[in-house]
View 1 (cartoon, one colour):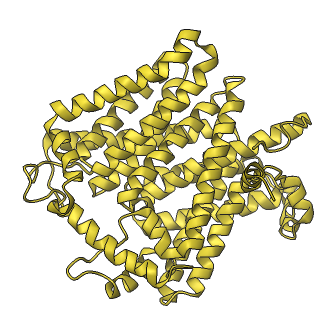
View 2 (spheres, rainbow, N blue to C red):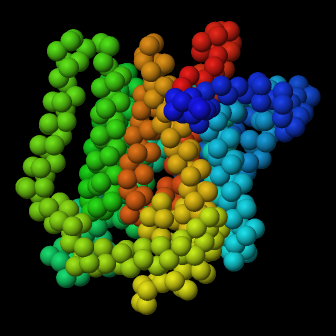
Length: 472
């Protein structure tokens, strides 16, 4: 009987080797078919730079443009990734994260084929596909430090514009586009900012990756001027997120800061005196707890919004979500294995048969329930597997970077913290699926996958038998 450790090592693809995969895979036949073109093309030397420019355009446009336009750009990502792959000499950049993401796509495709609303599910599968094209291209490019740094800088500067405009809305006042506050509460007329995104909860989710990456930048950027910029980014993101009054966003921020604090402690642990090695983390947790309690006691909007979480059905927003979740659970019970197929179009066609009267909804208001609805227990299990693998490998990469204090480790810390924040926020909302957030989500995943591939390539180049395999 296999031991728990051996099962865990198998689940984490301990012995995975892209080279061995290439030798046994028919798909690998297509890798390298375009090498002749690279030798004769004047465009090839700058091809990666053009691909980076395409990703930059997507992240610059995401908060401001239509979904259809972003979809076209993301479709182009698939073409760029295919050309880069055809020109590779071997399976460059392939990781177990790619394998599981492809498995999730296959599950979604099967769910589409078995869906009671096949055409609507096919539209959702198309949206998932273009998002995965972005992930594939980003993870291919983010293996290189220069592209990683430049794309993060672009993303953070766009976030600075979005966050600054949100703060201006708080100062100047802004029309509330919907009833985002309980009309019976004392905060019924309070301003909730939404910047260019049109929804405060969506803005809060957008700001979580910005906060995680800007916190990492605060330590990764070594010169004083870049550090001042990073500090400004952190302040703007935190202030704007506070002004959204998004309870899910606030909870996500607590999760983000908790993960980033823990990873930061681990990162600097070897350089600390023995006293701080023992007491810094407890002191940091104590200060954080005191800060949260003080904010709850002294800041009335925080106190009222937090208390509304525990108000149950007495809060209109809570009551709405509870009623939607009841209908969604009935949908899951009806098709528990493979779901109804991906996408909001499929959801909108099936949900009315299960909904409570007067509680229409465009989504499940929880990414976990949404995944169960779309792809059933099979897809949900695959997604949990992806997340476990991502965090497990991310921590291992941080350990490897810590040995030489490579700045890539800090970006991985920021990415993992942001992923944790989005997962907490996603428990009570599905803004994860909106393009401004979904593109950032797959960028965060691409940071981990790209650095995994880069570490493997470095270990192979060094012919190190220890680092050449993927540690558990």
